[in-house]
Image (cartoon, rainbow, N blue to C red; front, top):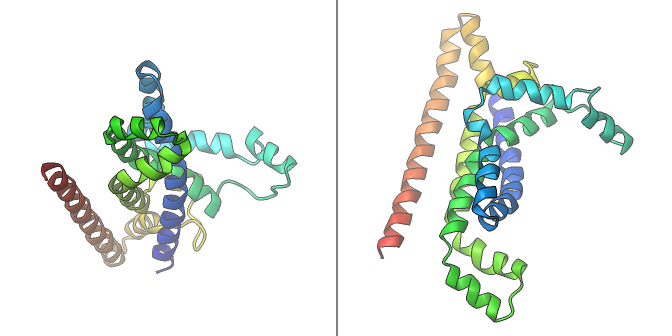
Length: 222
């Protein structure tokens, strides 16, 4: 039960940070020139193709207590560690799940009719006003889809959270690690219970995603 609550907490906090980070990133991507956009999108999509252990390894190097980032933060008054705790889990989860939030937003921002933005600009609306009052309202389904995908992807993480968070009971032991521990200890009944919860959650998530896609297609046809 503790691992489930911790996993939900990590996924919830991660999703909030991802939404806040992904909105300006997606807006930047749709505004840059195509030759730069390819490079930026490739960087943002790296977690999709990198093995989780590779990503976790480099995060350990960057976030270790003696690294330049931790040292810089200590000079600013931050005394905590960035690894093997809840903070580390969130940092790793945000980076690992970033493509699942930013890509739906990029697609949604791209689909906003340019004539709406141009008309608003001619009427004197500033760039921030156009983003808040036109782009975001017309991209709410992409925002919802990105949030759901991010939450679901964070729930199922294993490699990155193991590398950067370890296997500390009540602190960093999320559901995926708990299942691994039960299997390693030949406690198949407990592993089955947690796995069934994950299976049902994943199935429900897919139903929601396909339902949203159906609504989007219906709106386009109308």
